[in-house]
Length: 333
Image (cartoon, rainbow, N blue to C red; front, side, top):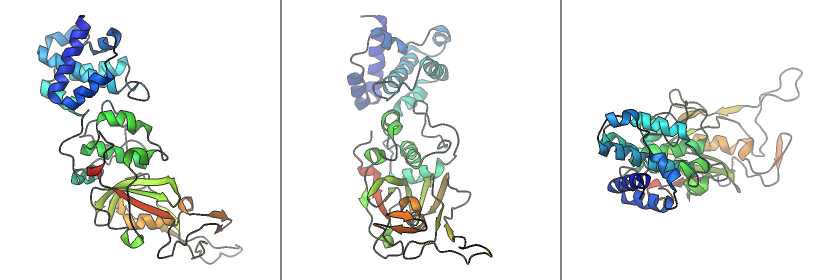
């Protein structure tokens, strides 16, 4: 048995002491590794041997094992880490106590403390629209949601911060999400009734709004309870509309044939905005219901024809509202 294989085996057994489920998954996914792949667990000599114990070194190799397995093909859709990123991890862990490295390894597992309240709190705490959300280095303590986050990516970041998903999930499912695939990874959600129910989604549930008959035109976020919600990449404005869907307009100015449309604007709490904000969920639903993108039918000039559902109708609606209880989702790991 080569030294490379011995190091690999020790790293795998180290993971097993922290999580049998994670170790079993690693065993299955790395069964075909050759020495070249196993050699990526090397600490590179140098200063490492002057710092920490052998057990500390095995812990870092265990972290590298998780990183190489889950942040590269075939688990990830592309190689998210190269030699440069692996060196960054080795350098960052150099001299760190074993308990610190263990904490990093556990990010490849779900957090046993996950709860709906933790998800709602994470959606409020992870609020800075800056930086990158990088799967291999993401921690649950970080408070940035990324630069220009898309709604479903923001939601997946909050799921990670709250412990409902792991780095493994971020690297695979989290990296594949698009408007047409988000519901495959986040869930379809239970249907909310008419507009009188728009404010009833429980705290810590994910909300999922989509266009009637078109689930790919969608918006995602987290309910804070009592009618409040939080999301990224929000639609903030929609024209007020008459029952026939024509825009409500001001009287025309002199020399103009039509007046300017009267708009409704989504109100945010504090410094919230379209990029990230907390708002009244029913108000957002009403705005989306009157937004051209979500309206059912075909516009001809200022009118809409076809299968339009009156935005002022007490029963009909251009949008569908659903919600997902994160504690019952079976597709996350």
